[in-house]
Every structure is written in structure tokens, then in C-alpha cells.
Image 1 (cartoon, one colour):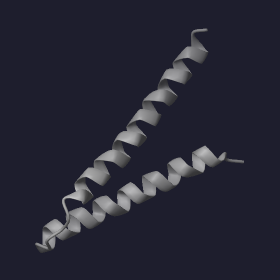
Image 2 (cartoon, rainbow, N blue to C red; image 1 turned 45 degrees about the vertical axis):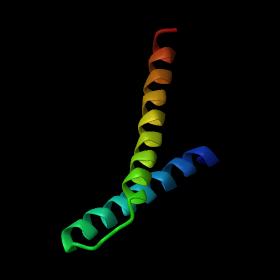
Image 3 (tube, helix red, strand yellow; image 1 turned 90 degrees about the horizontal axis):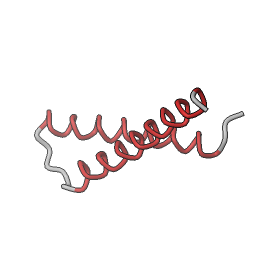
Image 4 (cartoon, rainbow, N blue to C red; image 1 turned 135 degrees about the vertical axis):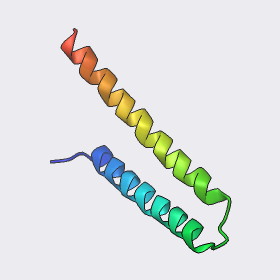
Length: 65
């Protein structure tokens, strides 16, 4: 069974993908959008990247210690 934290990561990834699709869709159709949207996408992407790096670090420490 997945933990609550793992499920939060899944929802964050899905939200980031949906927001990114909306952003590029708005760019393609020339729709004016808020300047907050790219910052929100970057924040979610940074969250996922930090957690991915943490997972790699923890895997490496388990193998070498």
C-alpha cells in the first residue's frame, strides 16, 4: 500500500502535467494568461525534482552503508 506522501507526489505530478498542458495550449491559441501559472508550474516541478534527488540520495546511501 502506498503512503500518503507517495500519493501526494502522484497528485503533484498530475497537477503539474495538467497545468503545463494548459500553459502550452494557451500559448498555442494566443490566449492571455496569468503570470502566476508559469511560476506555479516551476514550483511544482521543483518540488518533484527535489523529491527525486532525495530518492536517489537515499538509494545510494542504502547501497554504500
